[in-house]
Image (tube, rainbow, N blue to C red):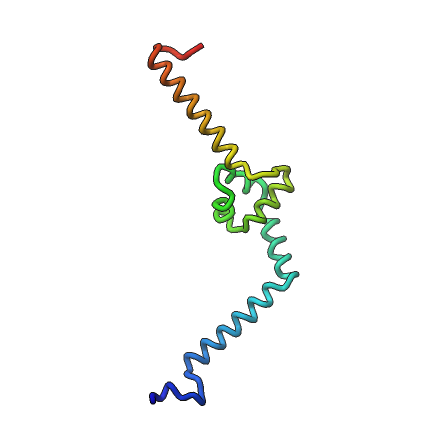
Length: 118
């Protein structure tokens, strides 16, 4: 049997690790108190404006939330408070695709006829 395997006293590394885990667990429990959570959400909400969120409408909701370092729920809540009921990514992507196709068609027709169609 090794000296470090003495079952009567834990190894120093194990005791330190256990203490760190206990401190982390105590911190996690204190952070998840309802009022602490509400304060964090309120602080994030105040620091994040609708203008910040709207700059990311061209991205999927999950990517926008990641870039803003907030939850998807908070992004949705800010949008709803400002009259945006659905995340506009798909609508914008569809519109941009239609515009791109129209420009390509115009370019194709102008190359065929030598001028833009009337």
